[in-house]
Image 1 (cartoon, rainbow, N blue to C red):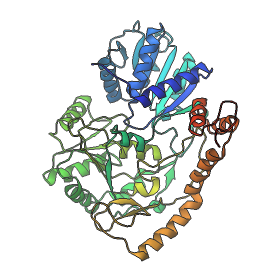
Image 2 (image 1 turned 90 degrees about the vertical axis):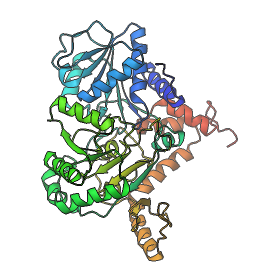
Image 3 (image 1 turned 90 degrees about the horizontal axis):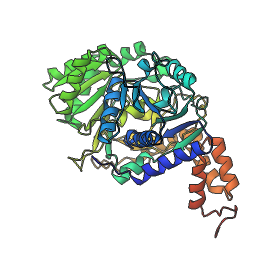
Image 4 (image 1 turned 135 degrees about the vertical axis):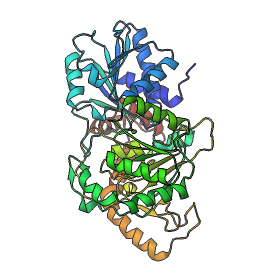
Length: 462
């Protein structure tokens, strides 16, 4: 099978290469779910091997090893696998490795020149740091969300940030499916739940969202909004996930629960049954988020509240992979826990940085829900595009008041950042912005071209 890189993928690879050419040794590349991070890093891995150097691509779950290995094989990249039960083939220049297995074989393997870390928002964990500190190679981390739980940045590991395309751009180019977002009424009250280490305490969540009435609504809304579609349901823990799977099965909808403790053979069979449509609902806890790729999946059910933007993005966008057999696919996201009101829509423009974000107060985003069909909409929308419901003036006034509060916290920050770039008149000013935000210097070149700033610093026709 031949692979041809898309223009944005070539740009991303060039930008990463530029950073290493400038002497950086720790680079973080940001690209949304569905941008083809495995293909781009596979391309870089092959180039490294052809140059006579060694590369290790490390992931943290067995499913990701299997998917990465399948992609590398399709790309014609000969590689070894470092995982429990896999043969030792350390002579092969490209290795796909389990982080957990890798930590126990550091002294047995040749040192790689290039270490690629998939889902690198995990990179501050002790296992990852042990690997990096032992070999001290050039490191590329790739992720859709370059921050840790609680909004902590990755600046203590990485030296620069390479920004890929946005979600909205990928949808516009056809590389991600468009989506409809529904947020039915829910009983979750975040102010009544404790937060530890940047995430909600699970025991507190269960008291609010694991009862028959709530789960009954999950089944009913699936039947109303996504009937017959393959959907992943994200749950709080095993008991919650099993409860939801039982309720779906009782309604005659084939469903199964899996989690990290499910036997590997059973888990693999369940995923295969989901891929071929035998199972309609795959209910899980802490499992089918990062890197899980089923293009024929058309829906996601969010039954687990999260305070983590990273987790939200990974889960909400999981059904947005385009399906070659269904070019008109529209993903359906059913949010039963109001995550959209905490984190915004999946394709919102977001300002990424290596810095740690300031702690946020509990607040809601500028999103409203159509009372007739439950579609989640921007607060400025006056007519629901799904059902034609017209929002009343009184509602608009209350929304505007909510917007006013939000603008003071969030939108003004984004506007200020855009204005900062808009006011830049010289390459030096753009360079200062890039340095302060941790952006690649290639960003400066692109912005200078967009703004028609000559390399001598003068603005052309400006």
